[in-house]
Length: 117
Length: 396
Image 1 (cartoon, rainbow over the protein chains, first blue to last red):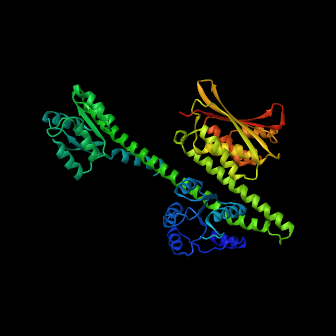
Image 2: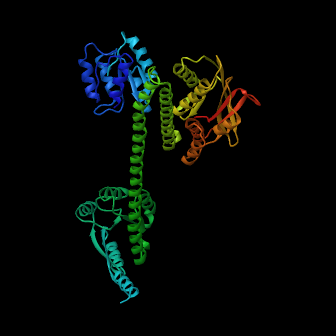
Image 3: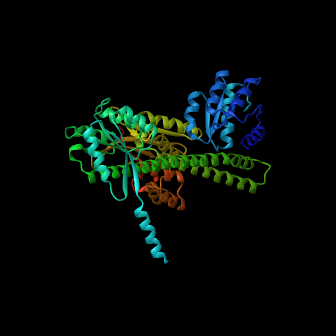
């Protein structure tokens, strides 16, 4: 539901969702195969197989310039996420304008505006 | 036969049942062996001791591996082992069987050591007589059994606690997750220029309500963490570093707000307080509250940290956050000062319409052994701004 919701809403706000995954391992695989790489990755924490922090670490190992926006209802994941190199953190539930503003800000740092998961 | 006499008959049957207690007797001195065997042979009408006697530690270990005993009578001085090691070695093999240490009068200290190390009792050989020995064995078995029950109960209680914490975490986390799409779609509708104005207003109410639910969950999560965690398990934080960090965070969260912050705090000592991450969110909440409710163009805040000493040599740091915003009317001041260190008071506060975050602040501070209250920046005129006073115990 979360993925479907944000795929629809991010499109409405003018972003292109280039990929999505329902677990950490799949996320790493999809990220490695995406060409070009997404400008922003939106990452949950409590994922099956591999949690968001571990997944973020692996993605950053593949591409240290990847911009991972961490989104979780688990606030205890904030500091481990930022310490492994996530570019931002939003506590769920967040407001759309907050999400959109943060993606734009991260996307600008990365290059042309777009997002993916 | 009526019920009374049936009951009596049953009781008689129980009474006449003879209990057999299996005793492992570890002793190498033939004299002591004979003496104690004789004492135990007396037994009683309801009690028969079935004794297995061995004279070395090796044999006792071997026997306990093979057979089950109700109690062990252990002499500490054996041909293959002397002193406390005898006890520890055997206990390691039979941790669930009560061990009663037999000792000479001049070895009493060692026997006491054995009891400290988990022996159920000790008996002095020269002072033994039948009844004392029998009672010693029976009490030891009983004590060992209640110890086991208590231990099992506390293990059960602990794992039940862990499970209920996991359910709470699951509940809090997943409701917050479930709120996400509700909030997102409602926000989408409220921002849709094509939607009828009424619909947009209603959608924005859904957003506001979802936001309230989310902050309520966060408040309860915070309370649960604070209730569960002993105070000394939280990190000690230094206000000198923390306060500017909190200011930075609030600026990042509210880039649209203009405000200035000035500090006045002792620079020659470390301003340490306990409470870790919760002190951070507490201070962030206080600053954020000032910034959120300010209606002026540019808010001026000043933060002062002063040492406070109260009766009983209690030392605190008091953080005074003043602002020239709209201030707190008196009825709100009392809400803030109301401490809510238990769920019932929390519920009552919520029922009175107090924001859950405010209740959490006061409850947190109460839990940490501090105080929070609000004064007028200009005494007697609340419209000139507020002064939030946060007093926390000094960390060591």
